[in-house]
Image 1 (cartoon, rainbow, N blue to C red):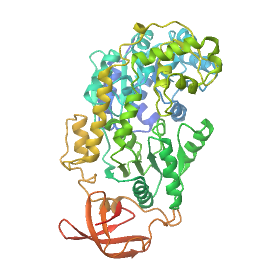
Image 2 (image 1 turned 30 degrees about the vertical axis):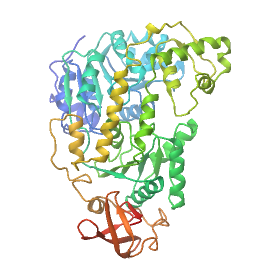
Image 3 (image 1 turned 180 degrees about the horizontal axis):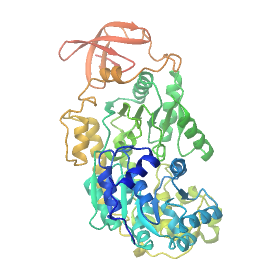
Image 4 (image 1 turned 135 degrees about the vertical axis):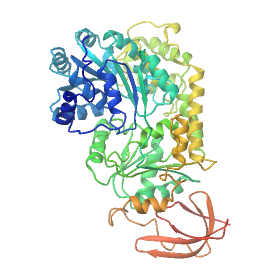
Length: 571
């Protein structure tokens, strides 16, 4: 396939496209080196923080290379926005996914075949369509880009069965030069991505994992009410949109009600809402300047909102990679964003269950297949709950059945879905037909090790700089000694005062912060760690401050109860 070795990132022709199509006058760090490699036809793995400019690494070369650049991405919610943004720059791009009719998909693929499209965005499940496979072979693919490349690795924090077949799909396209892009990858995950995609002598460019504008903090609480109180303090202290991530839907409902009692209204986003309700919530959040959304981690995949001022987790995520990925949705406009993990010690037990359920054994997969097979023609009358009941797993959070159904679909054992009443077995399966990747004990152990990593980050027994902990986890070349942007290296109050504005009067009520709640002589615990006695209660406008004498060094400190986690204790 023809290439343009005379082009490089600094070529006048490339600079001209950079300026007049993308409106960019200079490259960000790492971009130029990666673009040079892509233009030279070299395989690349590129790790860069969310919002750091990864997409330019394939979008700019796409306009200089012959044929089409195919972008494989799981982010259906974002594809239309990406294509609209490119077309606004007069860049010929389109997408093909399940939201389109068969005719629309056919017409758009024809545009790519005839050279009228330079960037074609598709989802990995498209490769399971026989009609798509017939057409895709006609494409002249100059470059293949895998977005969210960590989904390829079973050792990554968001492995997806559809991605397990991507090396096969790459072969179908003639093994074109390939670039994998991700915001989070440990060296082990990066090496696995290279192996899974069969990248040849790739440039591996690993930049930092997170941005300097993100303030990192963690707070240990002792019950759900203290968690709600701390979250209310953050919402009141920081003006602007925010995302609050939880794991269990009933917890999100409980937190929403607890915030409502304190006069704070929030949006809610989770899988039990209808598609219409989820779309409404997403649109309201995207258009707002101050809305707060309580959500499971499904919210954010495809959310590109620049002005998110805080990202708070109210449960321990499954690992540090997931936390870094999710806090990266804050402050994409380059302005400060507050990133805090509020956790209970019992969170670890809940995540251990999730890890167990996320790793069904090979025997369990075979059991799901045989249950479907035994149903025969009755399968059209069944639903997911019938399958769970038959397999004796009735906990709704236990998603092993869902994962097994996904695998059977990816492996083309089944077609259709239980939800739509058209699930059917289209080919027989033997246990030895299952990929070796499934049911590995090593995967389960690795996931537990990941959970231990995020717990160590949260507890931080050595009181290390949090950025230092992140850098060590990802084995980055540069390990900071002090970042001045985490709760170890910087006072929370000082950071809030210097970088954030409190929410405007009237945006929230302050019924949860009454001056009669604390009295002189009360013993309190601050931020889950420091114990002291209240010697004075001060009211400063809407703020309540306590003068607390520390039990440790007898020094007196002012504590703002709207900005710090304060718990009254018996002494």
